[in-house]
Length: 204
Image (cartoon, rainbow, N blue to C red; front, side, top):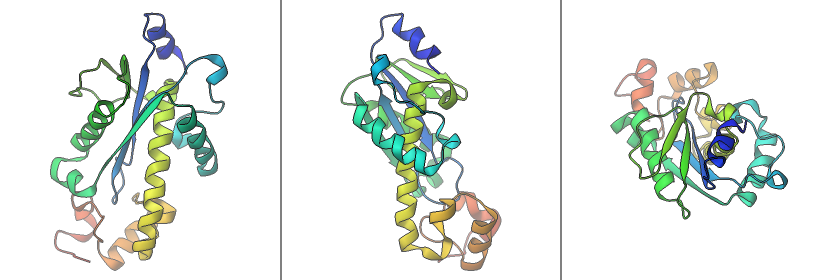
């Protein structure tokens, strides 16, 4: 999980950032992006860091606290459902990634990105397929993004309890689709994602 970091460390780069998102696929809620520079000295490494999708919610929460405490610098960008509908999810994800990198209080020497290419930033970037499983910094970013988004969806669940967002976090599970058909869309549903289920004019 350190091959990419070690490659850049050997070239004299010390401020290596990882960038990842959570929430590209759901039918509701925002996409959340995180950028983080982690210390890479052996004594500072956090045991158990992995792709956030491979971790239990309890483990993610525990690692999240450790990551933000140890991070040299991190930033988070939240792109809402309206923007996703307006510019599409890929462009919304890119916008979030650019925001995160540009908002870092410490400018990275290089940013390792989970898969996404062609970001308009003044920092060298390297897109890595399955980067959240191959790069320690990207995995840390994935955990920050995932935990941040899950906590947002728990808050939305209090506002729109009929959709059970606390369970599926807005993803298109069978339960969510059933509830969407039953109640129609709510204000945080992505219109461009749910047309197949409720059409264009089903207002809640």
